[in-house]
Image 1 (cartoon, rainbow, N blue to C red):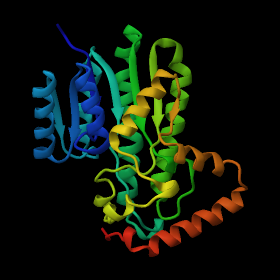
Image 2 (image 1 turned 45 degrees about the vertical axis):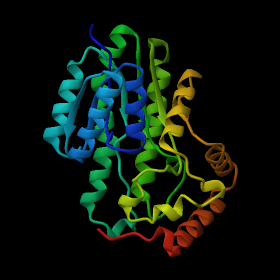
Image 3 (image 1 turned 90 degrees about the vertical axis):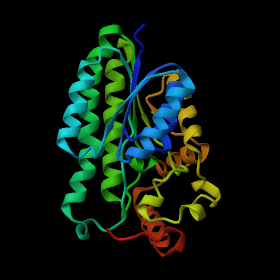
Length: 273
């Protein structure tokens, strides 16, 4: 019996790994991408033993054209793909003009170009059987103008609008497409940026962090409700609701002050690249 497959980018840890665990537990064979070979192989191997599934790995940077081209080609040939999670991503802190253009273009590639190419590759097989799920992991940052995270928030805005537009188009064709917009989540995402994440995650209030599996479970609930955009956490939904109701001039001031305070907070100190 040929099993249905779930393709997940950025599956080494965090939200990507949580999605891999979820779909493996539902009997899907997995196709995973990641950069840290030992970690990803060990993780995929544990899922294979635990859930009796098969897996395939693509190792390396998704900015490497040879790798993404191979993934794209193989995905287009997979007639059994039923799930695509575009989760791979990264962030950095810094003033736009002070960062090398290369890193801005790299973010555009990983967050936008790769997502578009893989979505385009997966859709024909899903539409042929009128069954499929595509989740593009964006961020609540896509709803805000973020000084210091300009490219991150801009690319996440693209991901949200892209997902929402496709969801409207393919809703009646059996393919569920959704933008998943988590806020602070307990992953190694922030430590890779140089933040002292253990202190960040202890912070209470509206920036309260959620676990990766909390985010995945909320995503599944949103899919079942037919939502095109999923924002896990009442705190995050309130922040976005509030931001859409205050004058933009006030929002700009709040964002400037918030970023300034965060930059001066030792819990959020970052390393230069």
